[in-house]
Image (cartoon, rainbow, N blue to C red; front, top):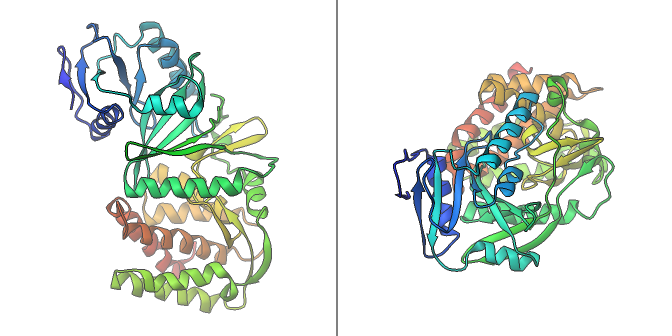
Length: 403
């Protein structure tokens, strides 16, 4: 935690502590001091901690225009009230340069830091603001990179742990497939560089500038099915019987990979049950984003901006992304419980045209359950253990209760 430079109530929230630790790590040899409201700051890199919808953000107060520009966390869940709040906060912090906000810190001392590395990579002098992105098994520092005119020119994701480095590898691989394609309904980031700095992996991607207006409540809750369909069919394969689908064979192989005996038995049983119940079913094959939620997208005119590609897959059953979108909306609203998962899935399947809705529900639950079971046994798995149990229970109940 920082050393007090004046009277100030230091926040002990875990998110803030992690943010502060990362700030000082990015400037080797430096230390943090806390600056009280209205107090003079040391002549050094000066930050202000601003609470936000995605957690606290560290913004530079030495450049008021940058402060205003960077405080712009917009996604498809942004309400008109949120937008007004963002505008007000940006205007206030810009006008006061953060001097009246209680939680301010200064990075004192140190040598060349990450900002120098990013400046070299991008070929221009840059600074950044930072937040810690909440992920299932990793907590990844995410930077908004700003040029000399205080315009956002890039996003930088940092791999600081085995789990966050794995996320960066998956993001690069996904964008290598998705990025070069021409899209009608989609806008995706471009990879600008992948480098390492001081034992930290650095992925720099182009920025997606989302408008503050994301529509009314009904539009925000609506899955962008045209964009989802465009993504899925870009990797379309002929429909095949489920037992012949490569993806289904991978689910079977996964059973033996699980270290937990209980998980192997329970998951193996539901895989066998699905293959038995749907043994004559054929299903089209395509791709899915893997975590397409309202928090990983924003609407911009006729297009949908989509980020967070770490779970992108091809060769999967078609129709998974709309299910995930609506299940995520339901669990965000009502908590991650079996009843909320079933409610979101029920809403998704009501929109499914033609036969096979029950099979699609089982396939979706199988996809997300297998993924969470694997993550629960890996680095940072304690963060998803409860989630994996909820999904496995819901999948087990599926064949008797349906929705």
